[in-house]
Structure formats: structure tokens, C-alpha cells
Length: 350
Image (cartoon, one colour):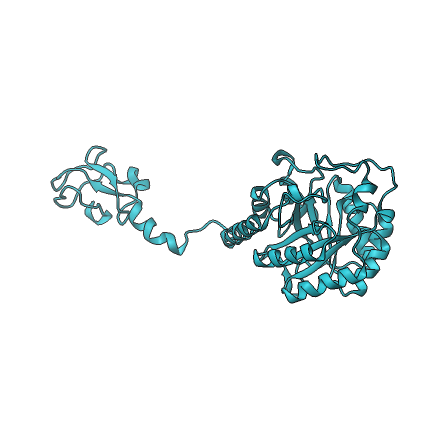
């Protein structure tokens, strides 16, 4: 399996961290709003903007209860809520892809049914995102895997065994590039439920796969922190205005200002992770030399004086005998007169 791969113009590897702005259906069924999402995502540092492709009839029965709690939501069932936002068809997605090309940002979408997979593939998508809820939807997984494009799969509400089974299933069905994304299916996710430690576990269990983080916490703190744990793809719900209605995701999404801050945070954090082991750095050498201490003569002492704990003291700079050799100096005689504040040298001693 390949941990390094391309998605259009975007490079995925351990050396960089990709941001996916999850627009989902925050376009509210409007190409005009979708275009604003695309422009703002690009402007503020996202590498990819992702939408969701579904038809309510293919997704849920009409009486399926909602699993989210949005006080503005008037719909009583999943079907009613999803039906409000499934108006985009092939031509609309073609337009979205065109707008992404125009704005130099990669397009991605999460298909929720086989027809959507084929439609997106025929439009030339560079890969697919699989939602956490479909991690056991093997018919859909097989359909996507057979396209042989990069796959990003969220793992919310999943066990390690389920993830292992699904990844193996995808591989058996021709998938070659799979990014596994830690996710918690709580909307929003409280920080104590973000489970960033699972990113390290996923890296251990899947050493040949890139690991990412699909984040549902509010704000950007947890997303930023996930990079330290090893996430190299960050997916975050994105909106142009958290006060917009219709989609239940607006209020828990990040806005353009937060996206920009997230990009800046990630860039800085990735820089901080470039060095792989503890060592003395070039920028520390001057400080190491002059901020450490040497054994220094505490008061004037005559030739032949026995060095003891009262006539030497550790002081800066660290250009003489290190205080770690304190016990090797005690008890030795001086060869000559030594004045106060002299940095002691072994050549001063018999």
C-alpha cells in the first residue's frame, strides 16, 4: 500500500498535512453559496473542498429517526432533513468541479449510493471519501474500491476489528491508496471524546497507511493538536456563515477565519515536527556554551591550596570545567596563584 500518493495536484505523505474543507451540504442547495464556499476554502488554506452526494430515497427510510440535535431543525426524520438538501444532480456537480478547477482547489465528495459513485467517477473525480456510517456497507465499499482511486475512510463509532475488516475488504477489491481517519460520531464532539490517542493506535495497526482525522469538535484546537499525534489529513466541517439555516452542519462548522488559523497552526506544527530525535541543534550551540556553568574560583587562593567546596563555585559561562566533574576537582592542589572569578582549568591543578 502507498502512504504517499497524489490526489490531483495535492500530495499526500507523512511530510505534509492536507486540509479538507468539508462543505458537505452547507451549500443549502445553492450553486451561488457553493461557489462562495469554494472560493473561501481556497483563499484560507484548504487543499481540497469536499461535498456530499446523495438522494434521500437512496439513503434512509422515511421514518428513520434523526441522530443529531440541532435546535433549529424542524424536520422530524432523517428523510425529511436530507430531502431538503439533495437537489444537486450531475450538472450541478459538473459545475462544482469546474468552479474548483477555476479556483485551483481539488474537488472531492462523499457518495452515499452506487449511482452517486458512478456519476462522480464519470465526472472525473480524483478519489472518494467514505463516511463513518458506511464502514460496514460492503456493497458500496466494493463499488468504490473497484474504481481504483484514492479512498479516505472515516472510522467513527467503529471498533479496531471493524476497521481491519473493512481495510482488508477494500484491498481485496483493488483499492491501493487508503487513508484511515480517526473520527468520533458525536455532533459536536466534546474534547474528552475526540480520542486523539487512537491516531497513534491506528498508526501502529496500519503502518502502511496514511492516518487522518475527521473532526467534529468545535473550533480548531483539537484539529491542530491531532497533527502532533500523527494525523496527516485533517477534515473539518466548513461554512461561510455559522448562522445560516437549512443544513444542520452550519453551526458546528468552522468559518473562513478559523480555517485560515487552522492552516497557519498546522504549518507551524509541521515545522516543529521536522527534527526526528533529541540532539543539540545548531541554534543551541551558542547558548549551550555561554549559559551553562564552569567551576570558578570563589576567592583568591595561593599556590598549593587544596581545592574544597568553599573555594570553587559553578558560574557561567560554560567554557571551563563542567560542574559535573566537581568531585574530580575536590582535593587537588593548585599549581599557581588563582584569582577570584577565574574559570578553573585542569591545567591549573596538580
